[in-house]
Image (cartoon, rainbow, N blue to C red; front, side):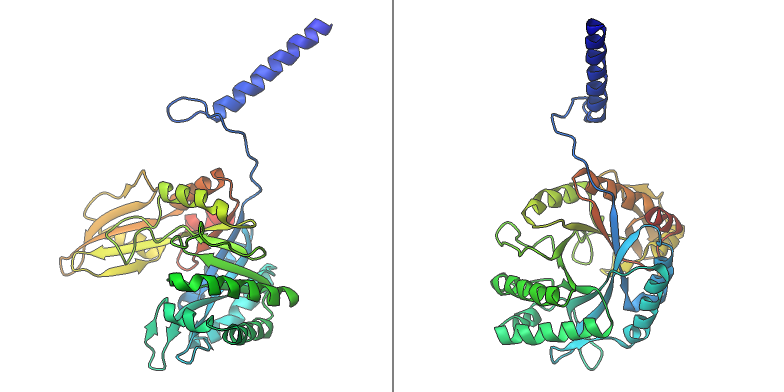
Amino acid sequence: MVKKALILTVIFAALVSACIKEKDLTSTGKVKETAIKTVPPLQLSTWVVDWQWEASIHDLKQLSNGLKSFQIFAAYFDNQDKLYFTEQMQTAMPQFLDTAKQMGLEKIDLTIVNDIINTDGTTIQKDSTLITRLIATKESREKHINEMINVVNQYDLSGVEIDFEMVKEKDWKKLITFYSELYQRLHKEGKKLRIVLEPRMPIEKWKLPKGPTYVMMAYNLYGTHSEPGPKADYAFITKLAKRMKNIPGDPAIAIATGGFDWSTNGNITSLTEKQAAQLANKSTSSIKRDPASGSLYFTYLDDYNVKHTVWYADSTTLLEWIKKIRKKGYHKVAIWRLGELGENTLKMLGE
């Protein structure tokens, strides 16, 4: 009996080992010598926006099963460095809050971005000098923090999300101090802090404070600043995930929906998924899927015979990006953004 039991034990161990090795086979057929890591269930969050608030709400309602929280991309600054809400957002805010209540969502953050909207309606996006002014002194930081907390309490939101981009190198020390001071104040109020990080942020150099939830932007690989290409590819996501070991806590990775349209006359236009799919009907070439990113791309001619190149993400693209993120050990994924997502994308994200 002992011998039989021993034989059965050896056979069982061999089968388990074989199963593990089969799952860990690489594309070359070699077995990876890495330990199996259990990743917690996927946690999705997303952004809604003021300039497309009705479409955002439509998409939000389709994600009732898959969503854990959402962020209201709402607060800009005026030319006096005070928080500013567009007329669209003033209309949309109660609608967002009512929708959240209907869906039973309680984790709602106010996103504050360093864009300036002037009195004449012109905008300055990602203004680094604004950040410099806001964090210059303890007094300026405290004034800004007080204003943010007042707004969050006014709308009874669960927290603040800071999306400050194009930060000057000389400002990182004071900005990190600002993050710490803001977190401590919010914590006393029973509120949360989320901080969005650009891929260019030198996370290897600066020690971020513990407490806030950090979100790394895994997009803008190609866009208005570049030649045609995907918002992200697998190599880009892998590289970012590896760098994120320097971020404290349980960070999230953000991926982007939609895409861009590059014309040969130099114009570059941001597209939602639905807009890109509609343009695909004009395609002068077959629609292809890029193996390095999972993104779709095609070309078309407009009414003036100008050639355009479009790259965008559909449900398959987003799913593959999420799989890559989870494979790297991360389970929190943020979706930039809602508004005119395809039906398959909504179904995939909502499951």
